[in-house]
Length: 184
Image (cartoon, rainbow, N blue to C red; front, side):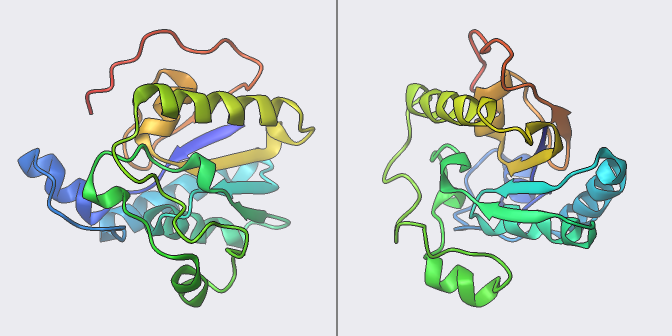
């Protein structure tokens, strides 16, 4: 399967410049972030993607938009692949508001508050990643699945720190990564 970190968000833009949380809840993509999403779909267009799993954060949902142009692609919103709650940007949006903004996706299965209450421990993120890995091993379409997620979740799955708009291949049957550097 393929793992894609969402494109640059307004949080990423400001945090990269200042290394301080700018206080933006569930931020949107910047123009660069939208461009990164378009570039990713161009790079992955020949990969035979049939299924996209996406986090319910706005920045991830916006990153998925260009993938809807690929033939036969279905999208599944899954809150278990969300970012590790560590910054203001990790405060999500209620499902009803997401449904009004993104009517092409299904949000009815999400809890009203699908993001974590407080800072999530490394162990909690790793446990979510382990559960996702196990679920993907049971599927027969993992080789044509794209996950659009976040830095912390992809790090927990792979041990790799990916930049905005970057993607990596992932094999759910592979070994779990060892110690990870949780410094972003």
